[in-house]
Image (cartoon, rainbow, N blue to C red; front, side, top):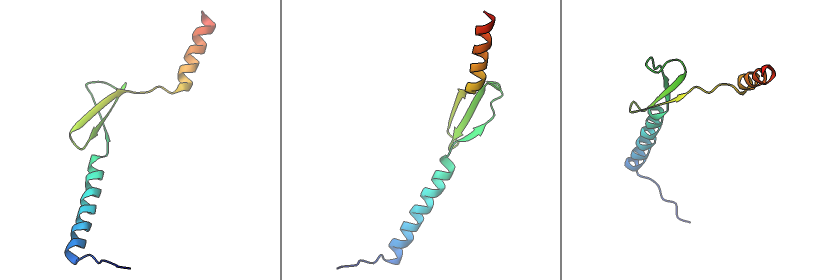
Length: 75
């Protein structure tokens, strides 16, 4: 059985690549941001300082079902 060993230079390059990949993942993860322009009904996130996405905040299902139940009994 043949076992190949990495040279110190190759090992250092491999460690550097793994470290850079870890840093890139940490920087790329989405972070919540405030959007005063859209208001409180919107939730925005920024990814890697470049891409900002916004979506309406989701209302919990319990609140939605209560509103529907109240509307049905009144009408």
